[in-house]
Amino acid sequence: MADKRDLSLAPRKENLRDAQVITPPVQFSLCEIKQHFLESIESIKAQYEVADSLAAKNDIGGCKTIWRSQVVLAEGMLDFYIREILLKIGNAATVTSMIEFVVKQSNISHASEMNIAFHSFFRC
View 1 (cartoon, rainbow, N blue to C red):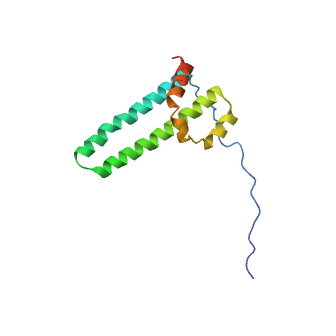
View 2 (cartoon, one colour):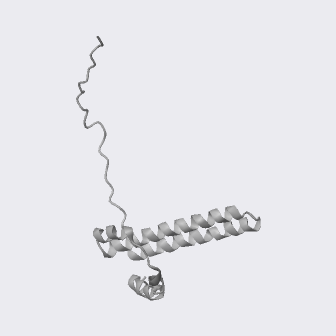
View 3 (tube, rainbow, N blue to C red):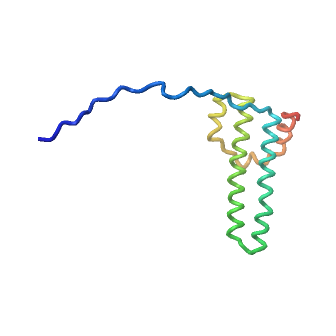
């Protein structure tokens, strides 16, 4: 007959680590949010030079990699920017509903009108 295994549990050890100080999240003003977004866009634009140098060396694969990464980074920054703005002017429920936000092609034609509204919104 096999030996019986001990399946009893040892008492849980508690309060072994020092308590960590919880730092509040960083809050930015609307102007700071816009400035961070514009700085990020400029850093993406700086990668054009890298792609141009690869194109001069006829490295089309390298160019495509740079361009793809620019698109992914720009989408991520735009998503972050929209969420930050909504958090400032809206509430968490609004942001949650925006997770599945899709821009219709017909709305893109109104971008210039929306740009005027957003520009006046910041007043920086």
